[in-house]
Amino acid sequence: MAAKPIWNYIPPVLIGLNILLVAALWHLRPQSAGSWIVIVLFLIEMTLALVFVSRKPKEVAARGHAGGSVRSGIVTAGLILVISLGAKLAMALGAVHYGDFALRATMAIVGAFLAVTGNAIPKNLKPLAAMHCDPARVQAVQRLAGWIWVLAGLAVAIAWLTLPINLAEAMCFLLLPSAILVMVGQAVWLRRARPSAL
Image (tube, rainbow, N blue to C red; front, side, top):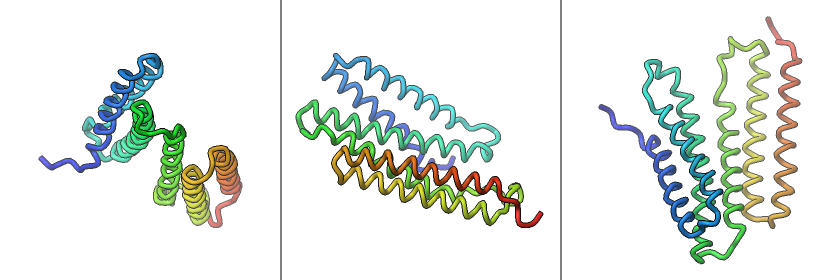
């Protein structure tokens, strides 16, 4: 029996850590029980998704990519929750007095997630023979989309780590819709473009 890679242990560890943080916060702030119940339900859903993906179906090769995507999502959500809940616990215990730390850290992780996702976009190419468009144009659009997400994600992360909150929010509301509009425009252009050779 082969040993599992360490990547397989990170999602359940993050779920367990989040459960401990919610339990500690529930004990310290029982008046916020409604919020803690919602987070516990979310953690239960993450656990069920992880269990579903961890089962070894007969067609493992077909589900391998989906399982990796679910694990990546669980790790990202788990990290966001750990930082947010950890900051709330530190504030409840009086260890941290900066009320905006949790928001800044969470948004910086969201920006980093966008950058990592953008980096993966050009690497997840369909087989070029299956496309009904010019393969060179498809690759160019995917590279552009990747660059846009990487740069937008890095800009969001840096903005939330360095700028005042009102400016960081304004940058997010300016950057992300602009990035989406550019990508939608490129997708429309690609859809309308005729293949160079059929």
